[in-house]
Amino acid sequence: MTIPRTWPGAVTAALLAMAPTGVSAAAPAVVGGATLTPISIEALPGFPGQDVAAALDAFRRVCVAPAPALPQPAGIAGDAAALAEACAAAKGDVPDAAAFFRDRFDAFRIDRAGAGQTGFLTGYFEPELVGSLDPGPDFPTPVLARPDDLVSLGPGETRPGLDPSLRAARATADGFGPYPDRAAIEDGALGAQARPILWLRDAVDLLLLQVQGSGRVRLPDGRAVRVLYDGRNGRPYTAVAKLIVQEGHLPLEGLTLARWTGWLRDHPDIAKRLIRANASYIFFRLAPIEDPALGPPGAANAPLSPGRSLAVDASLWRYGLPFWLAGPLPGAAPGEAGRLVIAADTGSAIVGPARGDLFVGTGAQAGIVAGNLRDAIGFVVLLPKAMPGGSAR
Image 1: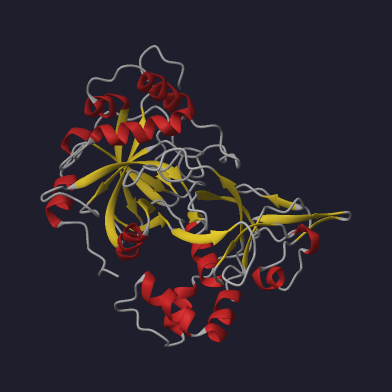
Image 2: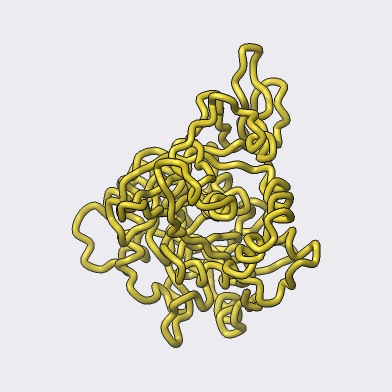
């Protein structure tokens, strides 16, 4: 892991000196306890960064994606009508991608109470695993399909008699109840509802797949398939790597994905206990790989763009919103002050207004980059303007 960096002093000083620009019609003053401070998009140091066309492509993918399986709550930041106008404008010829973002959006610095301008950014990736469509000695661990009795709950949604902290329910003849946790599922609590779609080499590969939310799997005949998130049991997530450190098995310093997954494989009895301590369980579905250069669909139903798709707190921010990440990022060119990214995904650990998870790509090298990305960074959200003559208010 890298040591978290603070937002560079020069950038901070420049932003503090900025004068407010025109404010979006539907801009909230506070989001998730953080103050949105209007700033001049022209004065953002380094904006719009390198290869802004890649950000526009990522924005377009979210614009044309089907509606999310779990609708976002009403009243979240990002006026829906104004964002739709921006999407419509992006469909046509856009000769200057940088001008598009400058003209269609207003910038707001996210200032967290007690933490100032510093947010926290991590990375995630799409793992490449080996597996089989049939069980066998080399592939004994099942990847389960979504059970028919699983009811997924959106933000703020509840069911009668169900603990409101649970994000899924089990439909029964008598109503709704809590869905079984990981240990219970592994012990057979789903019965006939447990339907394997694929088999992996061990429980560590399954954990990795579930933590990342999707993956590519190479089959014995050489074909590759994509395994996509298709629901979770709604139980709270516990990071197994964190448990390994807390119990003193490995130090935090130098802890990489390869190191802690390798440790789990070398200590199978302890590994089983620690993995079962993570009550969250993810279900999947199979899909073809249509474009190898893109990642799997995120929660916004758009294929993830490496280095450009950001997982955000979906109870606060609307999918499709651009964010300016103020600070050095993986693969940044010398002198690059930030990057323009698009909200396209979410995650159970991504909570708060200045918390993001950047999709960095597919495969082992992407896994190394993602594992090393744990940085303090500045967050600026770009909210869509209600354009003259438009329907947004």
